[in-house]
Image (cartoon, rainbow, N blue to C red; front, side, top):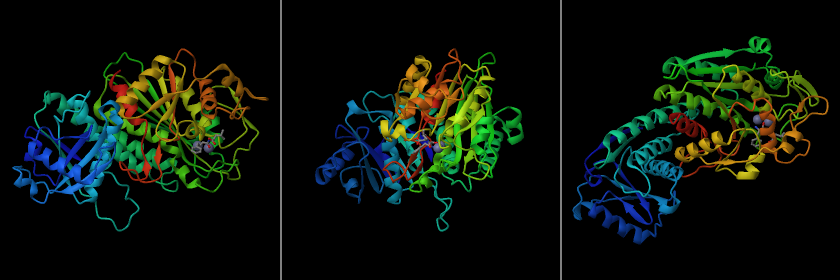
Length: 498
Ligand code: BES
Ligand code: ZN
Ligand code: ZN
């Protein structure tokens, strides 16, 4: 989606549709009397309550001109934001996405909205950023496999009205555009199924993206992984015909003395469970088990384009978890890259195995901090549902920063503890560790406690479990089913601030 700023007010715009956000039941038109009265009538007639994510599209039928308005727009889209006291960036992004989706369905290709809309407690640049990025996300459809679809039209969104700080608004638009490009292009990869998005395909995609954006990319293949003792990751791929890989993307940063931040993403191209085979119902969903890596790829692409100060390294730990003849058996003991031995009691708890070697590899970069993202446990959905991710870690400063970055990025994070009892739960009977807890409780935390064993206390580390948030299964007002790339927006907000 192409976004622009224009100083002229909303009621002079000639786009296909005007998006008017409604907050506290009041339409935010940027001060147009004619628009306000038309919308007030409409609200009265339809009972549109302006709840968050509610939309209403209605034609202007030229009535508008009779009221003294100048716009030629065919449609007005009302987009609810709920009450100002409840406003979050998440609501605004999703509401903008919902408005664009609703308008697109009605045939609109060009949109305008009021910049100086007077949304409470939000600066104009923050408004422009959230609406531009949310709008672009709302314009996205995954149509790669639909043989009969036409090439989707490019949409446009114009922000109308004088801004108090035009330079800051312009910067916000440039950022939103770069971030949207990263989100939409990675979504096309993240939504691919396991037969297409193989480890090799993801490696090729990463190398191409790195070349285009000025990152460096290196790939460890099976022989390299053997040499580097990544036996936990190799154990995950043992039952698959497709070889494991570790993909590393590097962004140099503008401060040559700074230590890098390392982002690690679980990238299981398909998780059948392995010998601990998952039940058939819903197994198709496990094509999404690469979404930690997809969020890291998205963030790296954003970083390459926005050039923040801090050096950043992205690591994707890639494998397919299958029950083939060479598969790892429950009970097998392996020695991870770190030297710690692991009893693999459940081959479906593979994400932590893929991650523990990648975390150990991350340490070789002498990182300032490590953040990993993973669709790691079904338990996180039991705990939090599908609208927020759990975060655990070894450094409360880092955790709090990421939670704050999540608020700014429109992603909800909720902290869970790691207590000594949780660590105890992961100690093995015959090996140092086992890959599932003895108690069978606190699944998300014990997975975190396992990962914690691979990071020394003096390196700030956080783990974000995105199993509930990485994918949308049924259509939502703000997006069609598919990958959400949850985590990328939090990471970029955090890194921009470093
Ligand atoms: N990729 C899954 C996590 C998952 C499970 C996401 C169910 C969504 C729904 C992960 O690899 C996994 O299978 N985890 C197991 C761990 C268990 C065996 C300790 C789980 O959560 O069931
Ligand atoms: Zn699994
Ligand atoms: Zn998995």
